[in-house]
Amino acid sequence: MNSTSLSRLTISIAAVVLGFSTIALAGPPLVCHAIAIGQAKTLPWVDLNYRKGQGSYELTNLTPDTLAILDSNPSVLVRMETLRRATIYARQDPQVAKELLTRLHARAVGSDSSPASALAWFDVGYLAETYKQWLRDGANPASGLDGYAWVKKAIALRGSDPEMEFGAALIALSGPESERNQHVDRAMVGVKTDALLAQNMASFFNRQTIAQN
View 1 (cartoon, one colour):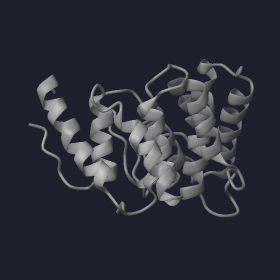
View 2: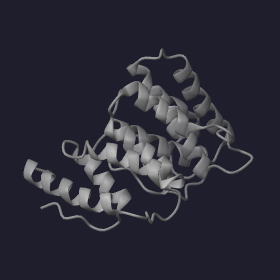
View 3: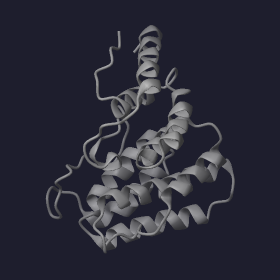
View 4: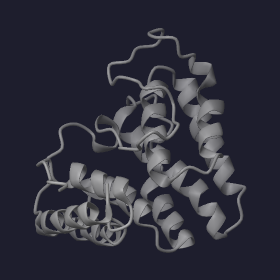
């Protein structure tokens, strides 16, 4: 996408997003709608209807595979899609789900309170909120956890990060509109220079097709 096309897309997104009053997404937004990440590496593709034993993916590899991707310092969008897929897999094995969340939480707690630790807090916070939307009651290790608070902590540590603000906006879809809109406004700052963020903003906050030319 050239700079002129991206500029036009940005203007179109701004007009749509700034004017929205309701958001219509079918199903839990953190799980049922894939994040566009281009050709970036993440976990193997997994369907929402995945059942343990289907396909060739070994669930015991989920925690090390997820950590390997997150520790490779990918973009926040790749982290979100990786954690979305991890949640779909983890639903099939409560022990695997607990192991992944426990490891991510220990990773965040063990980091210092510096901008570098922001990604660790974002990861565990986003995973916790995704678990809460998809894992079954009684087998959900994220029950009672406030992942949104951890994501906001990550944003405070990181400073200005439009992709993190986009993630927070998705979490905040179930909360007060005013709080969600604040995250959306801050995410919009990045769409002029981040084509994938622009694509995701258009996809999640308005289901209409937005012209890119």
